[in-house]
Length: 197
Image (cartoon, rainbow, N blue to C red; front, side, top):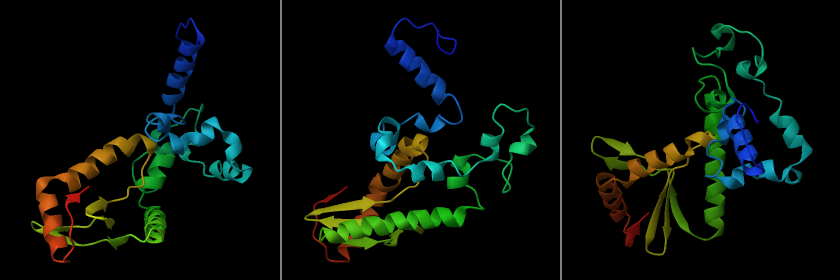
C-alpha cells in the first residue's frame, strides 16, 4: 500500500508516489513536467546541478511553505500585496511587490534570445508595434529567416501554466485578423516572405 492506494508492482507504486507528490503544494509544479522535460532534468540527474544552486533554491521561504504541518489561519498565509496565499508561484508571476523583478527576468530572456539570433546572422525586430483594429499588438520578436516570418512572444510562467500560455499565444497571434495586421505591417518594411509562423 502506497499513500492509501493498493499497489501490486513497482510501476503502480511509482505512479502512486508521483500522484501523491503532484497533489502537494511542493509538487504542484510537476503536473506538466513531461511538457518541458529539459527544465526538470535536475530531478533525474542531480549531479548536473552545482550545490550552490540547491542552496539558493531553498533560500526563499513563503508563508504557505513555512506553515506546512502547522495549524494556521488564512490571514497567516496571505501575501503582503493582497488576499492571495503567498506561494512561490504567486511571488514569481503575479505579485505586485515582485513585479519589477518579474519584468527584469523577462527582459533578460529577451536579451539572451536576441544574442542567439544575432549570432546566427538572422535579421529580427524587437517589440514591433503592429496596428490592429483600435489598438496595437506587440510581439517580443519578429524573426525573418529566408522566406518565413516567425512571431515570438516570450512568457515566464509556472510549469503547470505552460500549456495554457502556449494556447493563448497561438490564439492571440494566430487568428486570421492578427495575421492580416502583421502582414500589412511587414509589407511596409518591404520584406519578401511566404509564410508566418
